[in-house]
Image (cartoon, rainbow, N blue to C red; front, side):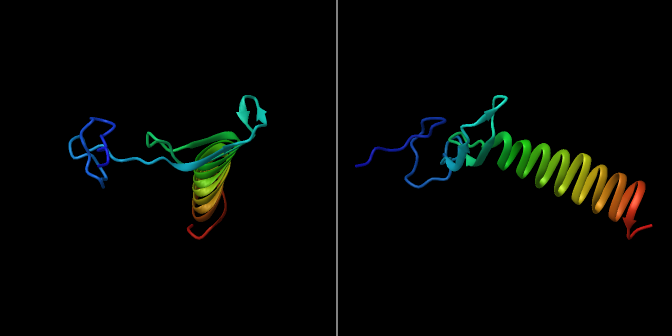
Length: 145
């Protein structure tokens, strides 16, 4: 007879197939993901860091490096779902130069919703802007006037 599994949170005996503990409602988390770091370092950070998925505690991996690629990416050049860096490319991008569905750029932003000094998007806000709905000091192009 197999040994019964115990909840890692409350040590309650778990059914054979479970999604969560019936006593404390802790979820079964199976670490799945991929993480790779280059051996080459620059100022204490890997030159390239690729990270997807989650660890055993259920936390999402965060890619941190000069070039960071992952669900959540922080770096000089960040590419991911949520990207933060000097150059940020992602669904949500925040950086000096940003590209994404929601792009916030200190210097320039391009995306569906773009906010920055220079912004181009369907909805754009900033100083020099262009887009379907552009709000700014200098409007480069716009459908709404």
